[in-house]
Length: 126
Image 1 (cartoon, rainbow, N blue to C red):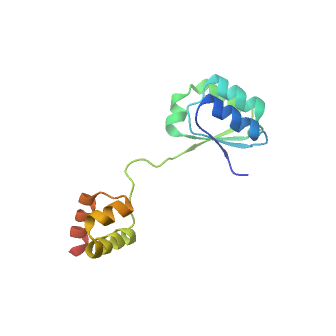
Image 2: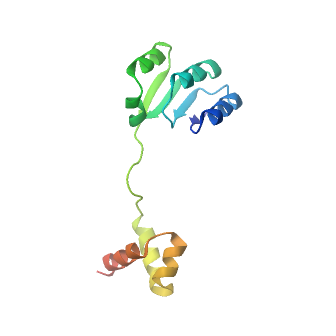
Image 3: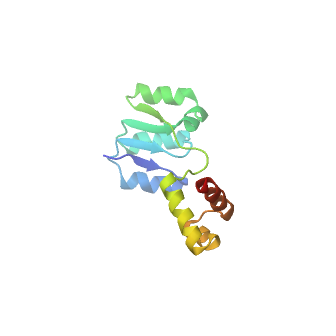
């Protein structure tokens, strides 16, 4: 089973938990409160919890220890950070389109800044 993703406001989280009481794997996208931990333990059959490093650090260690004592495995995931990267193949395609159709039109089409396209044109013309 794929993990149940927990994110949003408290009301949304309650609805998600009511719809999926059989969930074994939980992916926490928001910082959990004591209330949320109680809900997760009472309303799901949680065996594994996936959290980012930031969420893990922001919650007190005693809560994680209690979960581990209850047989829940905690997995800390690395999450992507920083600016979005583009593959060279896509960059070249955008540069080719820009040379044919114009930089402004291509920038709007692909959602890339004009200055970025000019930089790519300079990079790939050499």
